[in-house]
Image (cartoon, rainbow over all chains, first blue to last red; front, side, top):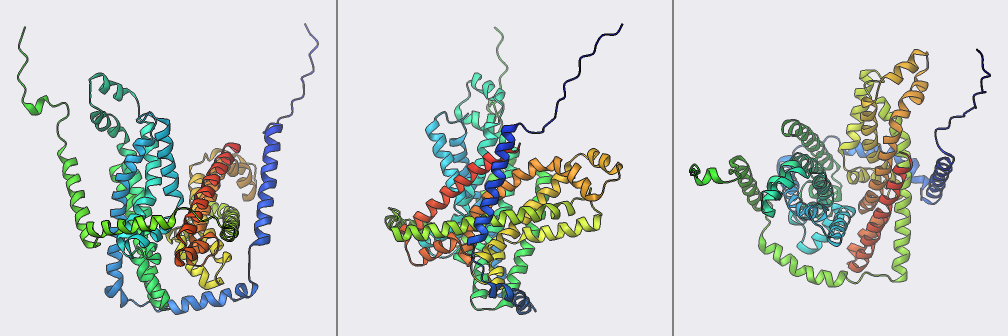
Length: 270
Length: 267
């Protein structure tokens, strides 16, 4: 029994809907316009550019041989200062960020105004870079590691608090309800309901931030925040490039060791 | 009624004390005290600083919106924006091949290790230190700042591209290879479709980061709003400093909005 087969309609497959394609094309055109605009008005002095290879060779020639003798005199103390600045700054930041994160988390603080205020603090502290904070704190407390530590602490609030508040908001509600039903106090709910759920994320965030802070605190000294940056600034302003090379080598070593240590800790605890 | 078994006070507590955690907290407190003594951080200095704080605050507030300052602000911000856009574009274009060259499932292991070494080198140095070196190499100005941000973008983006490529499914790659396709076709037809969505997300994040950092490289001679900011600090124009900082925060917030919108568009 044969029936007349209906001709199958021809579908043409497109990955994106017409509206999506229009939006994407507009986006690409905007990106092109932005690039052309940036290229046209950025100032490039050709003489400096022709000179660049010679200057770069000169730079490395002046750095070599590296002045290792300067290490015991100045750099070791600066290195220890940098490590303490980063660690103390991280500890302070974690304390401050925990308070702000609790204020931001919608399941803890049920006030839209307080949540928004917390979010603003997080964005504002994160947008202003640690070095700019350091400039402020140097104006307040004078040059030295106090300014550097506070700059690290305040700048880290944004990053730490953001991830911490997200971790708190993702906590499951079951244990919390059980604690409320048992009549637990607010402090017990936080400590026994939320904390065990947040702890792995918390440790991972703290270790990650400490790693970043070691890098940051190594340059804070350039604006008066103490530590390795101060040694680098001294070497650079006296044009002792061999000493600057030493500080760069030490910074490189510290960052590598910190990163390896971070990976090891994350593997062990988390 | 049967009497309840008598329990000691410690047994009746809902949560027994956690001694390891208490010891760790005590050790942390000891470290804080020790580190404060090493860094010469004292309460007296802190209080003294806050005394200066009220005076500084009176000089910071209100922010300075005088027309000549606004012109400086506008020039600095535009230059920062250009630095950030160019650094992101160049970083994105170069990081894709560099990231592919570092993926161990696509290229021979020696090449992957070499690329990883280069990426690690780029990631290790802070943008400020890179900017100092570039200022020496190509002179003061926006070019040095842009190059420093390109290096920072390369370190971040290439590493994430390499990780994304190593995590992807190898089945499409094998299918395309089985047709006898060249390496370039394999990359375009089987690798990029799998990693592109994440890569655009990373690029959007990098644009944010470059906007923030473009304020930074100017502090050491890399041009842009950072140079304006540093000059304002050195001339004790604290009210103008506040204007600049507010403008930077606004720009970064705007950048986060745009990049969030960009990520949604490409998901």
